[in-house]
Each structure stands twice: as structure tokens, then as C-alpha cells.
Image (cartoon, rainbow over all chains, first blue to last red; front, side, top):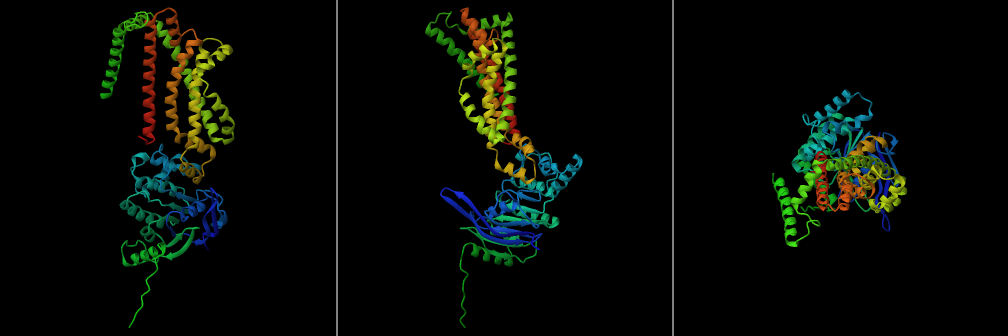
Length: 257
Length: 249
């Protein structure tokens, strides 16, 4: 039974002399616990799909259901992780992580303890009293992830979350993310334009192209995790996806014996 | 340390130029007193209590007027900033009233509420209220979209979003408008006192003019400048600490 179901999704944006067809007839299903990457160049509509799934935008046409229910707006059941973190600069790490818990009618001590649990999970023990301005980009994104996990969402939607970070930190966070997601059994939809990242993280990669945005092909990455970054199998997937993305014709080799 | 050095040098230079102007221009002592004469006048009004009374009157009005303008400015600014209908109804009239110099209000204010503390407080209020209110409303409209998205994502109610997310988010801009409003209000206080009161630093200037005591007049102007200078430093520090905490400096 598909957990996330998208049928005939269409999204138009009004522009100066008419409309821009950002998404045209997108269809897909995602099972619970899957890690999906939406991969494509800028403008292909991958972030738009994510915003619609998370309830920040409404589709022009088609249906979007999560857990059998249509998406009507943002909800703490489906948490978005943003590229630029979205931490509140006037609150320290502890208070930022507690943000979503304030509506949960917990005692203050319970709230504190729960936040503490997730701060440790993302490897930021000891940083509770620091403010976002004192943290590096990678640390800030960890806080955002802890904040998101603390409300125990069903789905985590990630919009190029490691895009603003350097490759070394990015790799570390990718590994940490895989560990956390596996342990917590979350359904993840991850937007990226980095092929390497998509192949490393995803169970399935949805390669998207634009005009109007649509899913060109879905790749099933049948490699156990954690994966090697440069094994022959990984490289093979990367090559295939690269060629699809850049519309390079696969070489036809003729054998003459 | 360097700042103190430069500041001192700046004042010393100004005083030197002043003295030079007197020597070169050969002004009548009664028209443009020398620095030493002004210092003497300063000592005179300082020791006979006139200066202290004037400062006390002015500061009393200033504190009340400024605080009211700031509190109301932020409150009204938040209200119209967050309720779009109110903003569209209120803003056009505000934009018409705002350019009317607070001093221009004095005649009607004095007619309506008489001479004394009230008109001075009213003028300070007018000078501070509009900038603070408009900055708050405008900053509310410009809040980074990501904060609002986060608020919606985590199910935070509209009221809570206004007070716990929007208000802190725009606090640096509010702090800046408080800084500017402080300076503007102080300036207008003095001009307000020149037309609507019987006490305070502004009144002392008019009184000195009427008695042809230009030395007292300049001494009073000096005091007004010094107080304004100190107030500006104090609120500048406050603004800086806010910006630091919000991670912008």
C-alpha cells in the first residue's frame, strides 16, 4: 500500500503574460520507510513537488495523498528540512530543538529531556546553550534535523539540505542521516542536483526534467547500505543516471566476429 | 582607547576653530561669546540651579514622551503589520500626517491642551511614534519567509507566530528605529519647548535670548548637544548588543 501517492500532479505559476507550467502530469508512489531522491537540474520542479507534498503549495491539478489522506496544508507530521536551516537566531540550540514540542502539552522537564535526546542523536551534545550564529553550517543543519525529529514526524522532506555545505561535511552528514533515518524508520523525500549524493542515499532515484517538469525515469538502486562511494556498482549507477540527465545516448556497440 | 582620543581631538579642534572665528571675525562679545565666556555662563547656571531645573523638566517630559511613543509605536506597528486590512486602511492617512513637522503641530496642541508639560510630551510622542510604528509594520511585511514556513510546519498558531516568531525576528529593525527615534525626539523636544512651555532647556534658550544673554544661550545649546550625544551612545550600545545576539555583527 503506497504511503505517499501522487496522481496527475500539475502545477502552474502565473507569470507576466500567462502561466508557467512548472509541473505537468507527475505520477508516483512512495512506500513507507523508503528513501527517495528527486534529482534534476534547477527549474525542473523538484522543489515544487516537495513544497506541494509538505503542504506549502497547492497543486493546480491532480491529487496528493499521504497515509490515505489528502494534503491540505503544512503539518508537523511531515517536516521540511530547508537548505538554509531556518533556525531562530535569538534562541539557543536547546530552545530551537524544543520549538515543535511547545504545542505538545509536555511538562517543561519532559520537553527539555526529549530535546536533549535528539540533540545527542545528531551529535551535538554539549552545544545546548550555543546560539545559531556561533555554529557552523553543518552544525546548524544538525540542529534543524534534531528539531524536526523531535516531533516524531512520519515523513521528512529535505530540500537540498546539504547544498550550502562543503563536500567533507556533506559526506559526514549524509552518513549520519542514513544512520538516523534507518533507526527511526522515517519516509524521506530528498531533493538534490548532486548525482553522487542521490546514488549514495536513495533507495530509488526519480530523475526529473523540465518544460514542463516531469519524472523522466525512476532508478532502483539495489545496493545495500551503507554503500561505498566509489565502488564499481555505485559508479555504474552514477554513469547511467548521468547519461539520462544529460540526454547522452548510450553507446551502441556492435560486435563483429 | 583610540575612539576616546579621536573624540577628544574632535572637540578640541572645534573649540579652537570657534575661538579663531571670534579673533578673526572681531565679533561683539554680546553677539558671539568666546568659549571661555560660555564656560563661565555654564558655571553660573550650573551653580544657581537653573541648569538643573531645566534638565530635570526636559528629561521628565522626554522620558515619558519617548516611552509612550515607543510602546505604542511597536504595538500599533505589530497590529497593522499583521492585519492587512488595517494596514491598507491606516497607511494612506499615516503617510499624509507623517510629513507634517511635529513643530507645526504645536500651535494646535497648545490651543487644545494649553501650555506646560503636555504639549512638550505630545511633540516628543509625535516625533517618535511614526518612525517606530512604520518601521515595525514594514519589518513585519519583510520577515524572512523561512520563519513563517517553519512556524506553519510545526503547527504554531497565528497569535503565537506574531509574538514569538515575528516580533523577535524584527527586533533588530525595531532597535534601529528606537535609536533613530531617540535622536529625532530629543531634537523636537527642544523646539517644542521653545514654543509651548515655561521651563526646560528649550525654554531656557528663549529666555536667554529675551535677556540678551547669548553666553547662557550658547551654554544651554552645549548642554542640549551633550545630552543628545550621551543618549545616542547609550542607545547605540543597546542596538549593538541586540544585533550581536541576533548574530548579525
